[in-house]
Length: 270
Image 1 (cartoon, rainbow, N blue to C red):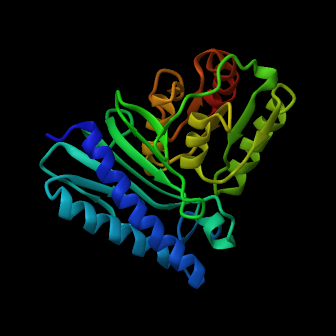
Image 2 (cartoon, one colour):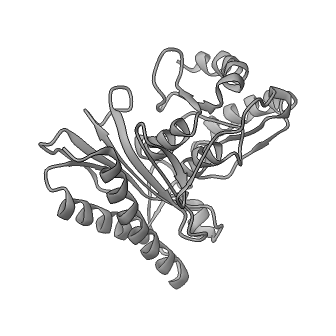
C-alpha cells in the first residue's frame, strides 16, 4: 500500500500533465462536443481528451486501482482505491477563456461515494496560473510547496463567501434567492464557477468560506481534502458528509456561524 504522500505525488504529476494538455487545447480553440444535463451544461472535446490522458496515466502507474471520471464514468479496481477525476472543472470558464478552471484529481479509499469514502490525497492544478494545490490526509495542504492555512477569527459580517449555481434555471433561481438573503450578512459573495478552486481558495485564505448544492463527487473530492487539511471544517446537509445535497467549508469558528444559515435554507430541499 503506498503512503498518502506517494499518492499525492502521483496525483500532482498526472494533474500537471493534464493541465498542460488542457492549456494547449484552449490556445488552439475550444470545440463543444455535447451538452449534458441542460444546454448550458457543456462538455468540450478537450474534457474528453484530458480525461483519457489522466485515465491512461493512472492505469499505467496504479493498474489495480478503480477510476471515476466525469466524462468516462467508473471502472472498478481490486486495490480498494479509486481515483476521482474532473478533467476540466469549470468548463464554461474554459469555453469563454476565463482563467479560472482546473484539473482535479483525488484518490479515495472505499466505495466511490462521498458519504462513505476516505480521501487519501489530491491535487488541483490551474493550467493558466500554473498554481498546484495538493494535500495528503494527515500531511497538510500546500500551494506550489508552500503550506496553506485557512483564515482565522473572521466574523460572519466580514466574511468573503464563495458559492456556485446549478445548470438548471429553476435551481439557480432558488440558489440566488438564498444569496439575496445572505449577502447583507457577510462582507460579500463571490461566484467563480469552479468548485475545486473555490475550495482551494478557502484553503489559501482567498475566500473565508464556500458553500454549494448540487456538486458531483469529482467536483469536490480533491478540493475538500485540501480545504480540510488547511484547517477548514467541511460538512454536508444535516449529519451527512459533503455531497450533492450540500457542501459547506469554512474555518471552525466561522463555520459555526455560517453553517446554520445555510442549513436552515437548504434543509427545505430534502
